[in-house]
Image 1 (cartoon, rainbow, N blue to C red):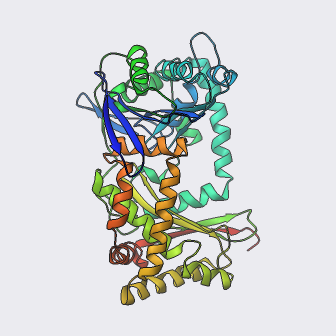
Image 2 (image 1 turned 90 degrees about the vertical axis):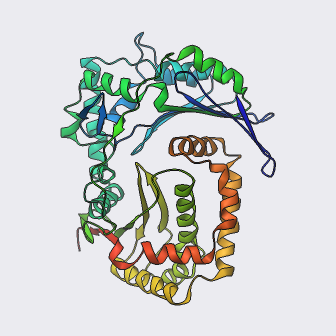
Image 3 (image 1 turned 180 degrees about the horizontal axis):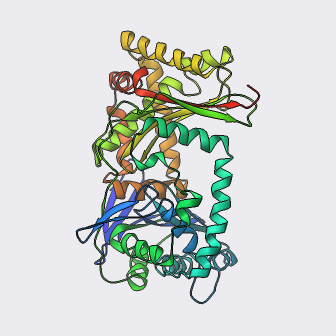
Length: 425
């Protein structure tokens, strides 16, 4: 395996690509009790249309999430979650717009748990009966989302922001779309997206990198599969498809979600730089210690439910912010005024440097939070960047860079907002 040292961070990272195309990243942490493994497919809710063998294939919304649920069924009827839990491991899985990941954390029996993880994720087993049963279960989950003000507000905003990109739609699909899913749909999508060349295995903790590679080579298919070409639709305009959306629901106070599309390189270190720049700029603009947040909190326009992040998935990079507010439009007006002030005066260097130091400490701490560390590693591997480059990049980003990012991406005409209003008005 290739060994890369990061002396300034005290980190050693091992990486290797097997003959079947599987990319493996292992970070040994000798002496630590916990170990974490994550086995991820570059496949999520947005990957509904793809080309394979010269043929374009369309699938119903929600297949990736449905497939994640069904992967825990084994042909012998065994319960994989119960098996891992019986050994003291904490297993779980998740599906996002462009990733489906299966993972566990344990203190003992890492090798055996890793074998179980790789075996069940690479063993599809679907029947008509089990698919019908799962359709009922996921339909209840979908209805739960339909009654969640947070979920509804988020997707109302994404629908206003994006005209066509599938990130505007819920990863779980709809009751109607999942009714179209058959065992054949699941087998086909597993074959296409769960082939080792479309997957990444990351392990962090008291692990042996060579043993990890040997286990993966022994259990997984020997031959690589073709990488599908994804189609997310025509390129989006930087301007939102609509400026406002929302509806009335059972909430005690208005709940708002605001966002903006960020133009960034498709992959690689330059995309990482834009992502990091955006996170720093947002920390400065609307973070909990920012002048903007403090002022609006004092005016009663924001409370502690307010949050902000930069989302990066399926080629779409999005500024997201929101929370409760008695007057969401006043918040957006204040945001517009703050961006105008930055355009005239720039970013305060001392405040920006405090944000930079805080972000550095947060990233440094993630190296000891193994699940978070592994998550950064596999996402970076899929998207062509190295998360350990973050530390050097932080020192290169200037206040002028942050001002340019904010003035370019958060102008009033670039933002969209949804508001969930109380039903009683």
